[in-house]
Amino acid sequence: MSEFILPKPSEWDGEKRPLFLAPMSGVTDLPYRLLAKECGADFTITEFTNSTALTRDAAMSWRKMETCEDENPFIPQIFGGVIDDMALAAELLEDSADIIDLNFGCPAPKVTKICAGAALMGEPENLVAMCEAVVNRVNIPVTAKMRLGTGQGNFNAKEICQELEQVGIQRLCVHGRTLRQRYSGVADWDYITEVVDSVDVPVIANGDVVDADTARACLSQTHAAGLMIGRGAIGRPSVFGEIKVGLGWMDREELPWIAAYEGDWDSLSYVAKQFATRRWCWNRYIELARQTTGLDIKSMRGHAVSFTKGLPSAKKIRSIMHGKQSREEFAQATSQFLATN
Ligand SMILES: Cc1cc2nc3c(=O)[nH]c(=O)nc-3n(C[C@H](O)[C@H](O)[C@H](O)COP(=O)(O)O)c2cc1C
Image 1 (cartoon, rainbow, N blue to C red):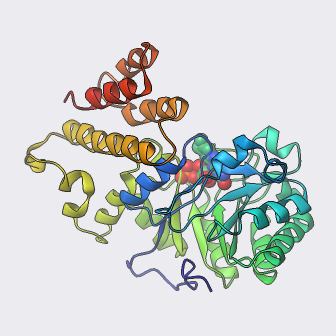
Image 2 (image 1 turned 180 degrees about the vertical axis):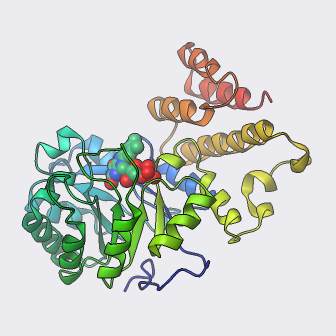
Image 3 (image 1 turned 90 degrees about the vertical axis):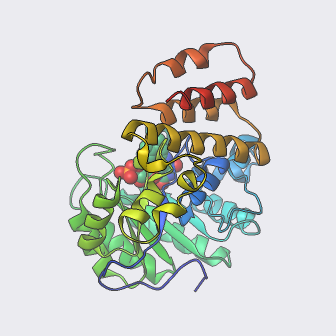
């Protein structure tokens, strides 16, 4: 077993379990993954990337697979509808990756129409054969992320997970919604618990974990081997450290934005703490981007909107964005906005 995959734990007794930044297309670029780690995430995964495009050497797809020495472990996620392409893409990634993650959760029509992502849950034999082919092709651990099922007929994640452990998938992640639900409704942690109890490999629970209270509730109910956080971490990479502090897994003073704050943190209002936290995160994101991918205007725009969402006068960020500035000026203007409180 890899150093990055611990054996399945038993009931949850309040002890530390790993927190994962969910793979999110358009969000989890390399500097954001590095930032989430500094904020308390234990594992991060790239956004999903088309395996067929990787085998055809598509530059855009390979750019999504960019990593750096500090990213440890590096876990690229691939998707596709062609078994040979999935196996070949995994092989091409094997040298740089520590783990390969396979996507069976994406509900986007452009993915499901090629019978990839969550659509494969409607063809469980193909899904299992794909996993087996990838496991047999590479000498690093292979993990898989899926939904409850397609939403037509009964949920089938449990049966699929049981087969996947037989073919050598070493860790599973279940998002508690169906393909049909996309992101609506409430994540079904009851069914995730059934999956956890039905296999011997570790299962990570995903869906609707947004803070320490929901993290505690999800771990108590599912006793999953870890939690994966998606939307709750968009614009809020600090959520990982906040959960760890809330669950007593780390001291508040260890949170980097508090450690770096020069004044009296406790005297700040709730809103001022939000500004200070997000400012630290934004500035660090920019530093990490400069050190790795370089500043990418599209990624910066997306993150700037998310980092300022919900803050008073957040709309100002739109006018900052529409001004004619260089990337460095845009980074600076966003940082200044976050310093205004
Ligand atoms: C913007 C966005 C992009 C996503 N991209 C991916 C992806 O590339 N691969 C994947 O497996 N899931 C993807 N997901 C799904 C998330 O990983 C996660 O399963 C889902 O958001 C449920 O978790 P949450 O309730 O914590 O958000 C994406 C979700 C969002 C919101």
